[in-house]
Every structure is written in structure tokens, then in C-alpha cells.
Image 1 (cartoon, rainbow, N blue to C red):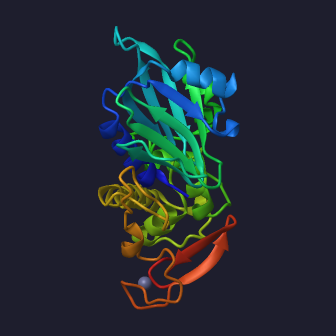
Image 2: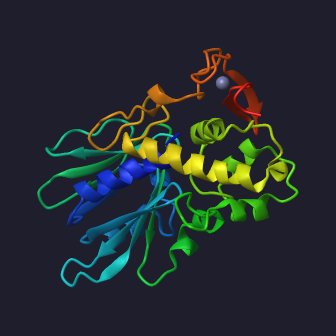
Length: 283
Ligand code: ZN
């Protein structure tokens, strides 16, 4: 599943590829790819003729500003969530779509941005101008602060986790606590912070919470820097696969020696997810 660094990598790809892209035509090949009111009809009508402006990321949501092609005035938003397997492809020349193609967007030069999604959980929204974005993309309302924001700090975590008996691993996966940190980054940041993933979140002191904040931001920054990936089939717009997996300290390294102390990396199940950790370095 794409996590924050992958989504950020996709955002950067879209931002550079789609500069002043005017959507001549949009086509939806599977109705459930559109989650906004009015379905694919309203979506395609809303996007057609508009210029694609800036892309921003909020958690794992991507949101493009649409602009009126003549005036440059805001004319609505285009939201995307990749979910499990959604990916964008850029096609310079006309090519036949594969069977997993869910949406297609052309400019006046017949160049195409294509949305391909094998599992078909990916979603898109059209938000009309003047409508609150989170009233259409309702999942945005439930998101906690971004890991890179000032709001995300030890004081915030201490307040939110006070008295909590759930594991710190489970807490970090909770998108309402912090937006966009998934399984690999939770494991890697807890290793970097030297904290056992089973530790009840409410028992962590200020210093430990500081370490967690720092470590999470650090592993996310590294992953964004290498074009982030957490899973083998992630591709950016140009078809390039990132390689964070190659540098993971604990994630999917069960039984292999800890890079720090040589202890075998252990795997446990927490919050229903495989959790990788070093029983010596993390306590
Ligand atoms: Zn170790």
C-alpha cells in the first residue's frame, strides 16, 4: 500500500508533469473510481476544459487545484486517493489502455495521464468551486496533523496518548493521531527511537515521545529522498521503482541480524499488522 513517501513522490511527479495541463477530455472506465456526488458524469464535466494547477498532499490524499483556462481563477478541486494499488502513468503518445485502466485524461496534444488500479479501491473526487473540500472528500476530516507540521510534536503526542493502553505501534498507525505514517515507517521509526513497539502508548515519557517524532520525520524524509517505496510494485509516473526496502533496518527483515547489534529481528502481530523489531535495541 502506498504510504506517505510514495504519495508525496506521486504528488511531485504530477506537479511537474501536469504543469499547465489543460484537461481536454476525461474518461472514467469504472464507475466506482469516482466517489463524489454525481458520479463519473459530474466528474468528467467538472474537470473538462480546466487547467490543472498546484497539487497538494494531505495524509495520503492528493488534491489538485483546478483553474479556469482563460481567467486563471480557481474552478474547483480534483481529489485522488491511490488506496492499495492505484497509480498514474504518463503517455506521451496514444496507446491502448490495459484492462486495469480506470480513468484517462487527455490534453489538447493527445498526451494522456492514465489512472491504472489493479485492485480498484482507488478513488477520485470532483469538488465544485465554493464547496468545502472536506464536505466532499469526507476522509480529510478524520486526519490528524501531518508529521512534518509544527503541530506534530512531543507535547501533542503526550496529550493525545495520555492514559492510552494501546501499543505505540497501533497508535502510530492511527491516521487521526498522525496522518500518513503506515506500517513500514512505524516499524522503522520505533527502531530508530529504540522503543519497543508493544509499549503501551500512555507509558512513554516526554523524551521518548520526542525521539519518536524525530525518528518518524527522519525516516519519512529519507524515503521521500529516494523516491519512496514500501512495496515491490510501486511505480512513480515515469515507471521508476523507489528502493527504501533495500535500506530498511527492521521492516521485513525477520530472522536477519540487527544492523546495530546482531540480534535476530523478531516479528510480532500488533493491531493486526506484522511488526518487525529488535528485542535488544528496543525496550
Ligand atoms: Zn539490535
